[in-house]
Length: 230
Image (tube, rainbow, N blue to C red):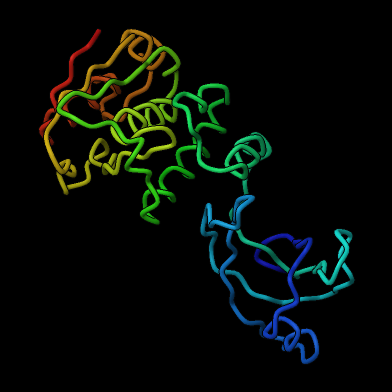
């Protein structure tokens, strides 16, 4: 049995390597990297390496010279249905306004944070829209879950669609101690009580005694970020 379910790729450009594989199929299969691109062709996400084991092909339903391919197996990790609207949103390009993530449920917010992290890793943050100065603002009216907090703090530090590159595993005992920001700043957390109430039962403390928000505040203080709760 394949490691993951079969997959159909619609609208593939018949490049030289792909055509060579279709003419002379190999049982073992090359391994390729599946990329998610937006409307402009810019890479949004890198998916995992997967085998290129083509079991069928035909002219694409999209027309032209494109091909539709059926693969014996696709990537092991695939987006959950709740994440589809997030993929659609990022397909139109990185967000221009803060808070767009707030319209999505928790699974969608988690996917949003993954897009933001991939954008940061690719070095595509828009410096022109990033907050500057010694004071940043986190607007917490919609921070009702952990993914929402990740999205909100990313936008506060970097701007719309931004990702705050912090090792959150520190909250679960990672010995790195946390990543210091390039420059210390004050984070003004508006409507902080929303997160404190919504995440009151969430904890990463092995004893289950420390609320998640308190752990986050301690981590931010440890890496030199001053937080003002409002």
